[in-house]
Image (cartoon, rainbow, N blue to C red; front, side, top):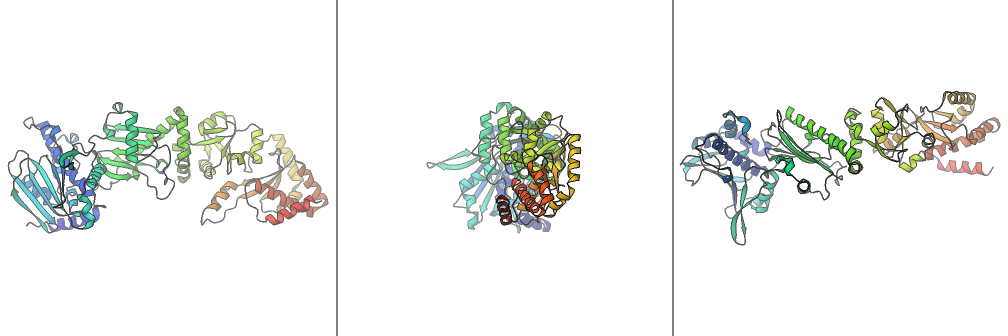
Length: 608
């Protein structure tokens, strides 16, 4: 029995207990090593004409023996000599694959998965004993390497009919490990992690008392095939099988990048949000592969939050992996891939918006809120990336339009107008909205609570300011009208001051912005009525109050009534003030603090 070096013992213990986050990863690692061994022999056969080995002859064989509690993984790759067994397996973190790749000049032609030399030892997470029997290619002698773990290992001479390596794992006796002796579990792990290994992974299965080898993996992933050879049905079937979606995707993006950075990606834009999409439990991310081996189920770094609905896979041999291959080291390659994917997604959505409007409207219904959140959550930093994807309801077009379309139709306007509320129909009935529509202004009607926050952080679009029609700084009057209104408010300042004293508002004034309605509420400053409602509805939030202005229609009969009351009955004027303010609050969808008082006041006014 030979002992591992002290540092190797510590590394093995750390690796088994800490590096790998789940035990099932062992099969991925052992199969990857088998694939590496075949890769080496295949490479040598291409560079040395004396080696007569056909690629079609290569395979990885899986056998289960429940009686002996063994799981065997065999390959007909290059095999190992006694010295290589000692060097590669006797010294932890010594990688034969890494040495092989670095000792060959044409490294770009060698896709070797394992480079750290520790993946093999993940087998000890599930095995009480690991036996390796190997015969190197073009050698007659075979040797075995055997170990029960950190206490040490032994190397002995043995016999083996063919070149290659057999790894025989004696599965631990505890019940939790029994599943690794079940055909369905091993089949599932192969499909999950090693489905796209480029050599057939064959498994011994017994059907009708007959044992035969069945190929489990798919060999060539769809994303590595030539796009012109793939039908839309194949793309959709892959999506349904891979992501368990009962509806077809709206679009797919298949990218095969070559040059300084090589990667393949196949990503999809779903047609609907998953049941948990808008919950805290949802995890974003694309499946990440390295040379066809699944590294991460959901790599969140490949997608920005505003495109978190996207599903798909990315495969690259250029990624710098950490020692366990389960986590990525942060590096330029990953960021470059992520940036490219983000551009592809945006361009695909813009194409869909222009060429397939019905599909885009379906996308917007499902994920529009996420795009808006992307602008708001970044405080407008990402608006240049996302603003052309936005859609809002146009009062003039009577349908959803993009900001670009709205801008094109309103180039001659000084500002871009919007109004917010609980629904399209409710917003249309706002006094300020009715007035602007009557003046043939086009208004963006926004029934979502997030809309106004988006406009606030954006500020403007193509140098035109966004203006809330319910704010107090809307400028649609002529100079003559402005002067007339200014004189009226100056003349009535004592009347308006008395009314303000009765109300919780910053100002009371006459306005010319109304047509039929007697009053309306406008706001001053950054907080609007809709923002007040949204922020106060949030749990554990401090109460927020918009700075409200009560505006009275200067052309409505109520204006003259108020003037008369000020001259003849100021106590009655106070009652009218409260009723008019209550009316304005109800129009805006705000609650009344004192509904009983208001109903009593209305009755008093009615009976006179």
